[in-house]
Length: 276
Length: 276
Image (cartoon, rainbow over all chains, first blue to last red; front, side):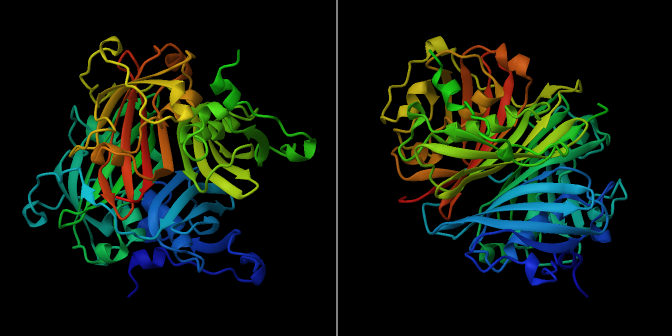
C-alpha cells in the first residue's frame, strides 16, 4: 500500500508538451499537477506542512533539479481548496554549487502559495553544531500524547510531548516533543519539510486553549545530507518557541533533531492569530 | 542632501505604460528601476541588506501596497552588478487583513534576487514578548568598534560590539552589538530590513578571521508598526548566533531590539561559506 505521504507528493507531469519547459536552456517555468489528500486535511484545507511538501516535491522531482534542499520558504496566500492544484516551479539560476528556484501553487481561486527554494551540493567544510540538544527522556520513556483535536493530518504522526502542551496555559510558549511517523517511512528532505510544521500554534501553548491561527510564512533550513537523513531513526526531537506576539502575528523559531542528536533543521514561521 | 539610504531605495517608475500594471484588477507584475549606490557597496557587489531593502521598497512604494511589512524573504541568486536593476513586484493575493507579494530583481546577467513579502494591517490582539532583552550597557558606555575591513557599506552604520567580535576565535558564534546609522534617519520597515543584515558572517566570530561567505537566503519578520518604529531611538540592539555549520552552509538566528527594549524584528539567514 502506498504511504499516504508518497500519495500526497505524487506529481503528474504536464499532459502535453506545451506545458513543459522549452528546450531552450535550463530555465523556465514548468507546471506539474498535485492534489490534496484526505489523510493530510487540517481544520480548514490541508495541513500547511503537507502543502509545503508538495511545493518542494514539485522542485525536487523536476528533472532539472541539482543538489539537495538547503532552504525553503513558502507563504500561504489563501486557503487551499480540496482537489487539484498546479505547482509551477522555475529554476531561475543554476550556479556551480547551488540552484535557486521559485515555486507557486495555483488553484481555480488563484494563487494559494508563493515560495522560493535553494538546492545545494554538499561540500566538506568546517562542521560544528552550537545549539545543544534539549535534555529529554528517550522516546520510549515519554507517554504518547492523546489527540485533543480530531484533525486528520495529526494521525500521520505520533506525538510525545515532553513539555509545553497546548492544553495548559503557560508564561512560555516553548514546546519540546518527540514526533514520529505513524506509518514508518525513511526521512528525506521533503518529509522533513512537512514535519517541521508539526508544532501547534504557539499561542495555544500560551493560553492553553485553541484559537484561530494560521501560518502565513514558513521557512526550513536543512542542515544535512540525504544519506544522513535516511539513516536517522524514526523519532524527531522538536522544539519551538515564539519571540513575540503582537498586532495579530507571532514568530516561531523551531529546531528539529534526529534521534541520534544531529541537528537536522532550523525552522521558522510567522503566524497570524486572532480572538485572543 | 539626500540620505544615501533614500538615494538607494529611490525607484523609477516604468517609463511607458506598457511596463506598468494593466487596469484589469489589482494583481499583475509591475517593473520599477533601481540602481546600486556606491555608498552601499560590499566587497563584491552591494551589501545584501541594501539589495533586500531595494526589493522591499519596490513593494512598499507600489501604489497597490496595503498594510505594513510583516515578513520578507529574499534569496540572493547571483552577484549584483553595479548599475541599474529591474525590480519586478506582484501583489498575487490581497486579502482582508494582508497582502502577499512576490519580488524579483533582474539585471543583464539574469535574475539576481527572488523573494516573497507579506504586508499586513496591524490589529489589536494579545501582546507579549517572550524573549528577554540581552543585559548590556547602554550605547554611550560601549566603545565604537573600529573598522577592520574597508567596506563602503559599513560606513553607513556605527557599530558598538558588546561581545563576539569578528577578530577573536570563540567557541560561540554569538555577537551582541549596538548599531546606529552614521547619518541619522528615523527607522522604518525598509531601513530595518537593511539593518537586520548588519551581522558579519557567524563563521568570522567562530574563527576570528574573515573567510569567503555570503548570504543565500535572508528573512525578516517585522514585529512592530510604522509609528512605533519611527518613534524608536537611533540605536538598535542586535544579537545573532548560528545553530549549525555543516556542508558549506550555516544558519543564523538574529533578533533586533529598539533602544527602549522593544523587540522589532526576528531575522534569519542561511549563509554559504568556504575555505574553512
